[in-house]
Length: 319
Image (cartoon, rainbow, N blue to C red; front, top):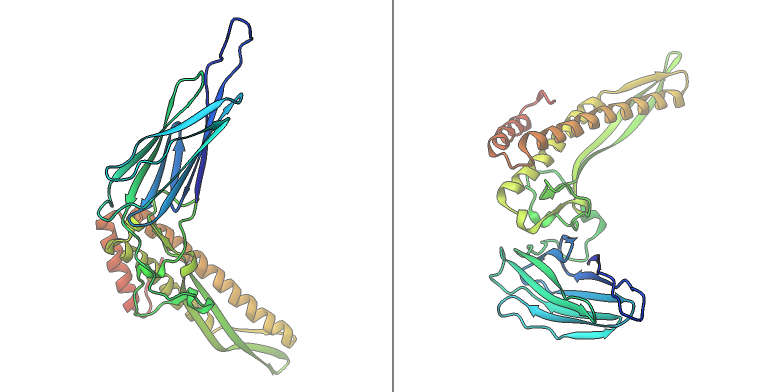
């Protein structure tokens, strides 16, 4: 649901027997079922998907209280015209619509005229950018908690893995974002050798995963080239998982007590994890920066080749 409010101050009214009274006309928008919206002056702009039901609620108030009306004056060709509404001090128009098939890529307007006694009319415009409908997720509902994480494998990511709604604070330069992470679990063994205790890694599990609940994509950004860009983000995560596993597998530590030896080993593991995570984050940022989030086709091709080669190498020289 998208909301916005605007305010217009009109000139004071005056009469021969009464002091001037400022007349204030204000309005607010509420668009249900819409994507990103932005408001400014008398125009409110939203994205809606083709075939997706939506509803706009436009509320106009006037102060001091007097009769106020909202009259529809324009809708897209073939769409029904809504009713006119009026009231004392407040008028509210509701209009439900579903962009029909074949309208994706178009921009249309719905226009109401607001007016109050003693004030000039104001045209309020809802500008709609109609996008392609988002594909239905391949994952069946209800989603189990264990399905939220997709482990890296030879199976490439699909747009149906991007479950999250669009974040309100998203970077305007991004059309999609994949959330990935690395984690590890280890079991340590401790034994006494001479006068000291020694700890070593007995078993180790590492994983590179995609968090589907935090991965999102704009409907119009779901292209094959954009999906490949997001796949390479995931591939980079897998490369740093392999680097972490190598750093952890041979760890050993000593101490005057069993607890001290174990604590030293776990501290080394956590330090290795922090160092690899920092390198991983820097590599992801560099990848986005150099490819302009995948929009620079030439640099994207360079990174595609580079990451593919790293995945094949035993000891790649990662940044």
